[in-house]
Length: 343
Image (cartoon, rainbow, N blue to C red; front, side, top):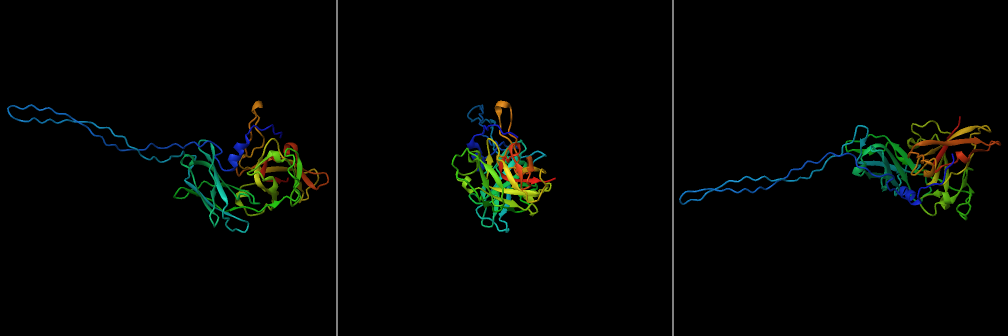
């Protein structure tokens, strides 16, 4: 798929990656508050007396008062009321990760997507995210967990919307962050708009253009890393409810690819026959789109929802059987997780 010139501003992407709301926060419907008010009334009375006497009069007055009350948020039947989200971030050994960051991206009953500011994990890897009142009527929730500046994958996990008695949404399992291996061949940045081949530990090759890669920090290119993960690993965040995946790679630092996509050559570890075609898939991340928007031609960006695996093209085993090639319209659209499914 051809990716026309992007019209998205880099600052918008950076804001999203740093945890600023990905969509306008629209308040869920709220009940009106009830209040009691007190009013003072004044009345005048006139009395008439004969002879020497005093007259008394009674007067009635009406007073109006205004009261303020707190109303409870009321969600519709399709959404779930969520006040906080809790979970754990761990490494591959199951040890809690202190200082990781976790944020919630919420699809609201208004249709808006809101990504809350990241919250740090404690010494045991636990985190608790308070959901702002305007974002508590939730249709879908995805937790994003990462360690800034580390050679680790970012975890994206779709959450089952089952809250406890305190309206807390707990994670079903810890979020595992996997170590990635720095590139073995990383040419100098030089001309940031020039294509160069970056080679990774297991032989994965990516035709990379630094000027079209948008991560979190200026030195992200120097820290490019990847990891081929055994798809048989027990990780419900990555593979729950997914069709079998034959190969999967985690990339870091995560980022978006703008104004095009990156060609790939994946080692054919499975020994697939030359000419075999595989389905290429990518895991949705912040600002991940299959194409760039092109308003002049009425083309909208196709967004990949966070934590969702989405097909993006076809990979073909090379004539010599050494690699699976995904190029041109089948190239990698986002620097996050990707994989393929063989026939």
